[in-house]
Image 1 (cartoon, helix red, strand yellow):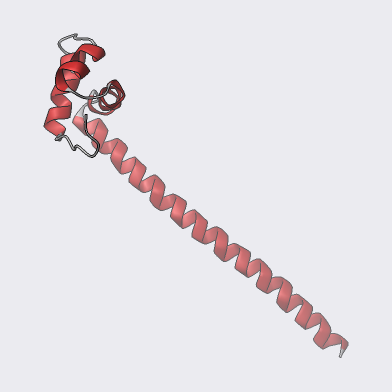
Image 2 (cartoon, rainbow, N blue to C red):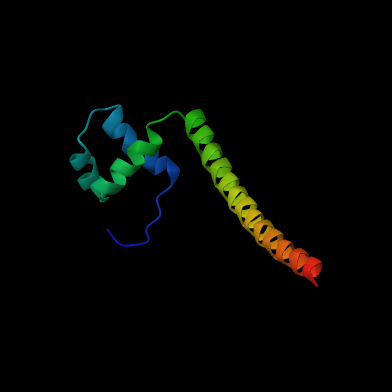
Length: 98
């Protein structure tokens, strides 16, 4: 198998069906189709689930990534505010002593 070959979702689904529905072995299907067993196992993991469940999981992954970015930004803002609080506390103290 050459590198960079992209297979359609229909091709992947049919390969998975040969294993899951028709009962062929992963090794047999991968050899007949000229794909690696690792790829086929990855496809089985993804395409053996119903489309609705796959879409929901994709949505959850997207939402999780968005929330991680939002959390990182909030943590950075909190760190900045902590530094500013320390800075202004020191400035306030030195102004009172002057």
